Image (cartoon, rainbow, N blue to C red; front, side):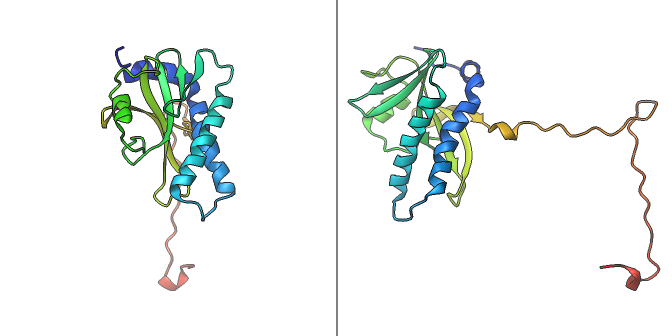
Length: 195
């Protein structure tokens, strides 16, 4: 199967961007409510991964064209979207590549090669990156791999970070923007200035 272009993938993902954001954000917020310093970063990542799958199942329940595929022999859970995308949920490194050990299977998976038990579709990762202090999610995106490099990437923004329209200045009668009048007073001496 030919790999989907970024534009074709975006047309499938666009309607679900908020869902993808929540799949990453809700588990992190859950972790922040009860962080446990005794747990290793790997354990934290595994907990968040399990919570991501749980959130994804809730978010995409009943969404036409979406289904979860479990590959028990590899311990993989993938979400198929529209028969054309297979989504795997992961934590990303700084280059938006999935953080996992590169086994032979993982390398073939990232090269989009045919694999037993894996449905034929373009394979992408939905993942999150943490800020440098690992206290909050820096961003969420969907990445398509081509071997070790990211072929394309789609940024996922939270709903509240949408474009905010700023008020336009009032127009005068001729349609030109009116400038606000500002009056500057000079103090007589330096000591007259209020600090």
